[in-house]
Image (cartoon, rainbow over all chains, first blue to last red):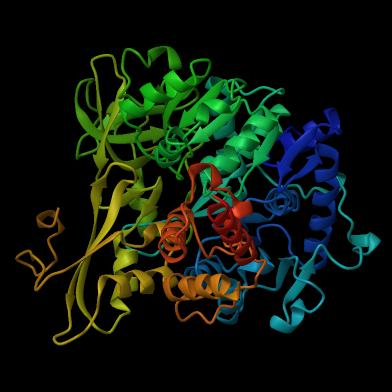
Length: 525
Length: 86
């Protein structure tokens, strides 16, 4: 690399490759991958992408579960100056097609086993020039002519073999990633993050979370989700080892792996911690190496925090808050837990934040208002959605000292105590957080409206001890229509990620309306 | 023991894959194929307990027992043998 030192997403990894080539970087599916071996895979994949004509600024969708290919894909895409777009493996055909089309993705990397979603999505898309199918086999091009098996049957021609010195001169202000997030309008929005955004967030996190080279990070969170993704970046930057599981569907298996690998860091969300604490015989597993537990994505109850601390007395617990638009905002130092267990803490280093009133003016400590964030980690905006970007990125008022600078309005209401510690209150809009995932009621309603026996539907979140909130649909059926709860759930399962599927369906004769005829959801809660 | 596999396959098609035309191979992982997530596995366990009269213990909630038609068939057979021997 030449020129002044930049902050690019793949660089910490390559620095660690130089320093610790033989160290295990990743344990996944029973395989151990060293930093050196991963680098060779990255080189091969980057070469393959270049051979397919993918280059700087092109969007590459990673429709992959937690896997070595996800990690390799992220690094290869970043190395050639392209933009990676992680897509959760649970995503169904229609939404995948929407994302590929919206971002005009130039390439797609996916698993053969996810064909039910990608084959149809590709049929509805013309922007993708190459689709690399992991475990695709030699016949994969028969499904779709743009498909190639990955890893390839033959090595890339020498001219395309990627060497790190070939790194395109990406600027740190170039886009590194587009991460789709649910919006209140129903259509997912692509959060644009530059290399500078992502590396600034990483720097801030590392300034409070003491991840070290000898750490073994156990990640069961999807890498397609910011919280999961950054654990790879934390590992690569620190030279630690990431142990990756595809999910928490089998808690017992995860705990077995945690004990066997002597995991030291475990990031979770409340639903995962509930399952973990409910494992019978958890004390039979030696989890004494655990030294850091973190929670984000949804507020964790004080009771859960107490139980976690009793179960893992040797570990420090970090309550945190963040959002895709800037990765993270706050953390509670573990030494504050006894004093203020319900708080998500204060701002990370290298950023500013304040609570604002309706007009955007900052509020004094002790008030409730919308959390506003300023810093180098704040997104560039939503991909090709200027109106929605303008709602979130707004000029700061002069009273903040940053007159005119664009700052992020999180849409989340917090209160502060007299010393400025933050407590989550509610979301301003009606997004439901269930199982740590954001669900747009509109998106669920759109799916249910596709049933022609449905006259009207309103979806809300209803409090649920385990899920945070559970999705509930109120439906008015067409006169004479036969439609049961199970029919609605099945229909949704075929179109939506499973966490979006209503847990409850209630059939009603009419929905409450406002004077202007809009469905009044507040009356349903 | 074709009955166990067939019954589970039908349960999955009716409840999780309805109308998708998906085919479930005997050795395919439900987790990797996104046929089931954690709440889906809970429904599967209830189905196994109700249909085959077996009790799935917490310690048995591992992919080796539950994460493919082949694994379920072998698991149910072991449970039935253990019960017959008891």
